[in-house]
Image 1 (cartoon, rainbow, N blue to C red):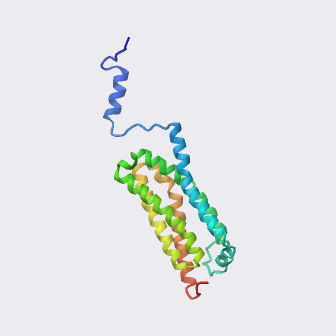
Image 2: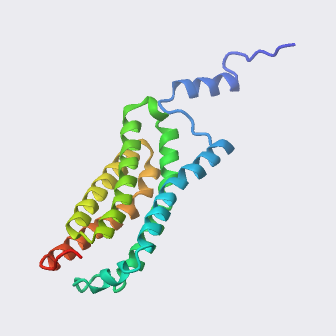
Length: 196
């Protein structure tokens, strides 16, 4: 026998509150956990790839440490950059999956743009390894500038879609801005030295 809910019953009120609300309820399932894990592999994979490219160059650390640096710069640039990148990039995969889920996937323009900025940011991150391998400080600064711009844009759009996801980008934005300022200072202080 099929049970029917009486008008005004608890079930009827619960359904009406969901239908009338401006936001869909947020439900997290085991497939969401898997999706967040797999999406987290994107920034971690970009970090590992960039680190492997840079660690293959034995002279890179020596070259970076031989540059004229501002007083506030870390002593060992290579190690400081690696640790900062890893710590600030770690939450980006989770934030990306949550934004994708909350934003309705690729069906909505703001989510498409946010995901595009995330992809562009990861490409610029990998481009950093190329600039370092070429020993080109101007290229490194421009790359860091684009990295910062895409990070700030992604943080803003992620925050519009899901506030907590936007917060996950804040440490990374500060880190990329610090990197941009540092790369500009390195470029200007070492402008007279030729590329090796």
